[in-house]
Length: 324
Image 1 (cartoon, rainbow, N blue to C red):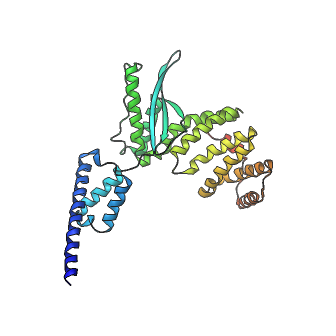
Image 2: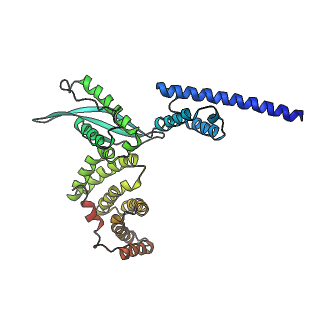
Image 3: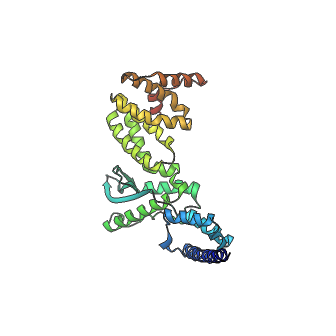
């Protein structure tokens, strides 16, 4: 009986000590969140799991008021996010034409957290950044209140000092945009990195320049894989264009592998526009590679029989309509 009483007293003291410790940590975090102290941000995964565990056990909730706890978790959700992409603008160059002169900035998108061997460099002018900012303001004016695009200079745009400063500020601008989930997943943000190259590639494809189009499409796909990891359906048009180029260059094995990447996303997201044309192309490629076709042919017949619309286009006809 005495042992039980001592155990109860000890447990109460231990709980009180833990509660005081958590309350002190929570108060400290809340203070830092209010004052913008970066020493507590971001929390690592272990800290987040520990906080969740303590809250679930009823320890931290008993030491914080409801308002403080709500404020704390709002700040956690808004301010803590593991960075997945990094942006670099390592260099810039000045382009001079007869009646115009401007600076283009080389941009590299790097996947953090692991070694990224696929570095693709794209070039954008300041006017491209300005266009992006105006596009984003239409849908995200409130989110952009604290994010400013570096202003255009009236004088000294081509001095080495100003170009270097502009490289840094534009890189910071992209990083801030990416930190906001809705913006980094927006069509305008993704198009900033991929649209010019895709437009060039499709023009080459329509002109029969399959080798050149293939190279540009492969680079664009690398960027899309980094920027569109949340939605694989966004890669489907580019994968289909790659397949067309590879097939017309008679690289049938690569074309089949590309189609094999696109087909699961088409099925999953119900992209009926692409399903029948891609299945038809895949069946043809399997014949060329002397592979079994029965399973894909069954799926193709089933899809064709379920369609009540007009006769579907071939994959090539579908692809050449993009970016027209």
